Length: 181
Image 1 (cartoon, rainbow, N blue to C red):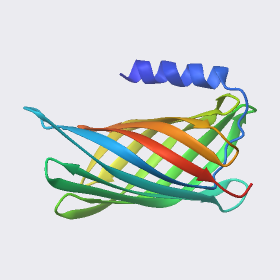
Image 2: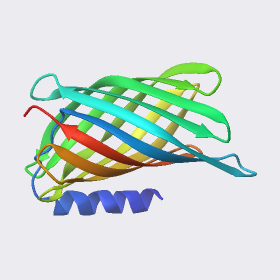
Image 3: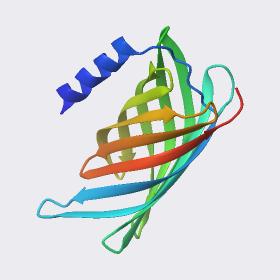
């Protein structure tokens, strides 16, 4: 799995066109999640909402909320924090985020997350994100997340996001409204 993700990241970094990405957006979406319990897998679906806005040229605020009903159990996650981005080379941006995280699965637990990865454009209108995520809520886990997005106008985009951490895999379809610069 790690080799596959590393190979995809290298291909995206080497083939990116121009890093014209925005950190000013609001998005809503639908997501499906699957939880591997070892002896069986359970799945469910729900909604997602997120926002980001630039604080200055390099820093941004990021936050999101998701709620999924998995076999009658509501799983809610809230994340909020700050991020930093810098041009790694002309077509690719290095991105790091630190977030406060709250997970509620009947009982609430708080923790933090750290994500390091990249963002860029594969071709005009096609944008990608790819991150290695470390989350510590009760226990520490490492995972991966990524999104492929298409801007069908300068202000609107649709994206397909995948996230995996520990025994939970999520796939989401997000609609993004970009504002500001």
